[in-house]
Length: 282
Image (cartoon, rainbow, N blue to C red; front, top):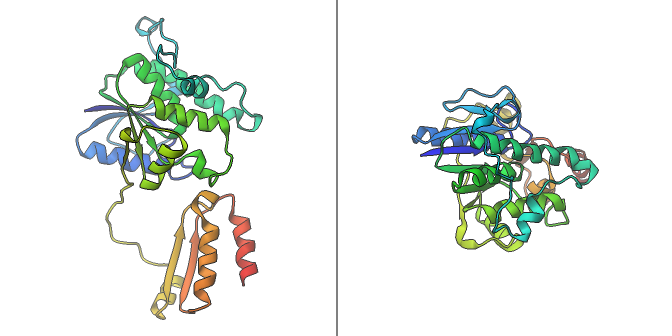
């Protein structure tokens, strides 16, 4: 099978876990014999791979090979959700206009890229790449799979999020032939909050590489050697990950036991808030 994959980031350039997840999944597919081309919106140094990486901002296409009758995202069967979520987002809020404009540009560039490769499946990771995946589907008539690593609903803990992002998410999932979510919880969000047909939503959990764990730092090793347990929070310190609940749970447990150490690793916009919360808890 040949797959044209659209991503947004790739190690060592990561803003979160999306790039790492894409790398792991792509490497596993390559090991399974799947031929793939991985597309990124901009040229950046990337980790060495066994599959080609294409950068959308430097791709050149022979004008003779370009279809002139194609209008990105246009379809006779387009739904209102498609028209609302997949059109250019020039009226986006100023704070998000740069990112949304980059997403739009990626979608336009994907039209050209899709016309230069042969593939049996299109795979688009998260909302940042959905417009690119849809554009590729429009010019190729090849099935589109969108991979939902997170949703705007999750990122805002169910509160009011960015309307433009939510529309792109919904459009991408509506237009996709198959939707993959990373958990059953995310699947329920996709079905219930985005009104996606449950028959086309499947769960594929993120995998891990089995290897010997690294040695603990001397300080943590000393804690372990003294017979204490260590509970680790590892992830972005954002509302989506619930680090404040980790602190609340730690406070309750430490009221009953004094042989457990709670460790938080990672960064995020809640970091200062969590430091103040931990200090207040004592």
